[in-house]
Image 1 (cartoon, helix red, strand yellow):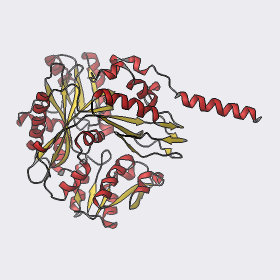
Image 2 (cartoon, helix red, strand yellow):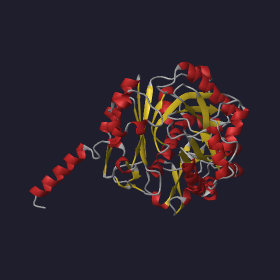
Image 3 (tube, one colour):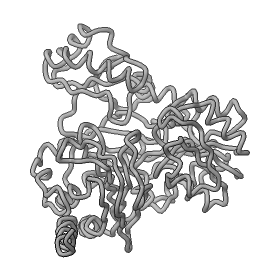
Image 4 (cartoon, one colour):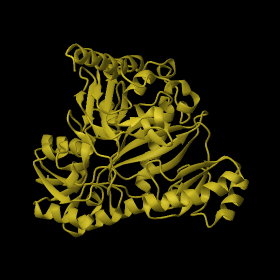
Length: 472
């Protein structure tokens, strides 16, 4: 086992990894940019290293991060998610320095990071893929010819994309022409690669992903599925495990395909195989994420498996301690991404100072967060403040517990997604357990909620009354 691990990340992601390190008796080294000097992950780590003044570029400085790992006496590096987590050059540099990279091989990252290469690998392995282009699109004319052949709607996607970015739906020739150049620009800005490919658009699909663990000895298992269908602009908001849509037969078949997909590319460590499933329960491979997923806590909640601990154990060369037959899932878990965003204003980020913070508790409640009262949410990073995970024995109880936990959650000083989630969780639409990627478009009434917490209104009124009484 490792003695000391550098975590090449920040925020709640770094804190999550620190916790597993602590339970395994491993020292955790945090990195931070100058503006992050007072971040919670810096306080939680055994050692913290400042890697630069720039808020974003510092976390992308491969050589500085690797040197920090060497200088601090680390023997392994965990990339977390985001930043360099799917950068094969970073993984290569870590290995070249004589350190262990806690993740898949650089080649697997490279192959699965290219959506066109991933499609080719899955087709060769007999995994069902969505009908689409063979390789990258050569031009707008090539895209138009293919779209007319497949039939609209179609999806333009960045070949090097991920995280819901670089994706545009096109319903006709005109939209395809307009979106082609726009998507190319988005792809270049986000991924440094403007190659695009095209897929047939599956209308109102369920977004289902299977968690994979694969060791260095050829053992591969899945930890069942997560339903990530509640999204806005291809960005996940709420995730559920297991899916309320899949039956046991479909779950078994999709799990087997997910394992086959990982085996086809000699995958090692934790990964996620993502599928689209239509209303008739036909499913197709969409992509493979070669990293820990943001929503992994709900899988941990229903299986009892510490995925980060398994990542570390696998990287140390140990075999998986269980087989597929040993694994089972219990109850339902729901994850709410608590973001400093204003849903009433197109989910625009709302950085600022948190003046009050109180997280919920009780049985079946887990909070993975990185903020506290007095913390200034910076404008440079993802707007996530915390992830609220709720577990219960059945779906109905999970919904009720979510309503209670969301009501108990109190964040002041910045606008967050909490009021929106309170309204959504209490709705009949959510209680029905029927979700697809167009869920929010189908239920626009869910955005018709009171933008401010009533408790904040009361607190403000009391403050005004006190000030008036004091003659201020």
